Image 1 (tube, rainbow, N blue to C red):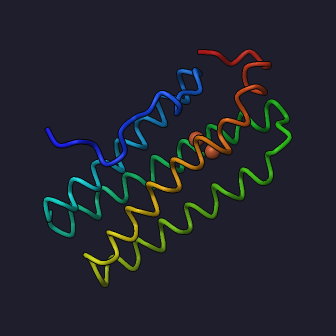
Image 2: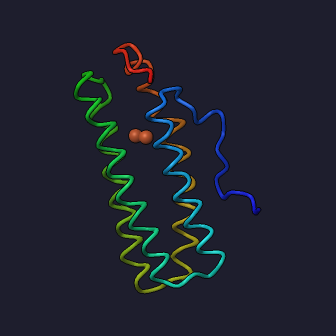
Image 3: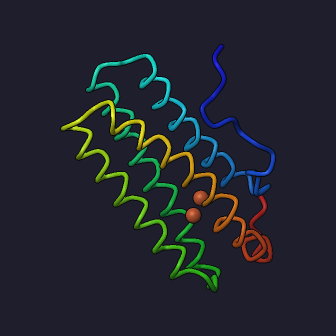
Length: 138
Ligand SMILES: [Fe+2]
Ligand SMILES: [Fe+2]
């Protein structure tokens, strides 16, 4: 089996099971998009994966943001802003993909890889202490 585009790393773990499961699913969807891309799958199949990625991302962000509110997390505003900008970018990629398939997907995949890795290791790691202090472990 070919190596994943983004292999899961131990450093991605927040050790909050709910969050880690969702991050694994997000990474898996990006890997699926990569696979569809290198296999030169039909446009509509790639578009389906992009839609799934957008929907799951929105779902995951909502869960994080609900905890921010519930726990009065101090970096709520800037974190939500990062989420919103990401969704906007992926939606814009999706829109442009409709016009130019190949070039766009390369650019999109590199963006997704860089963003998800940086966001989990950077911004998401910052809320762990707050979440755990509020009793969220499992
Ligand atoms: Fe996250
Ligand atoms: Fe986040």
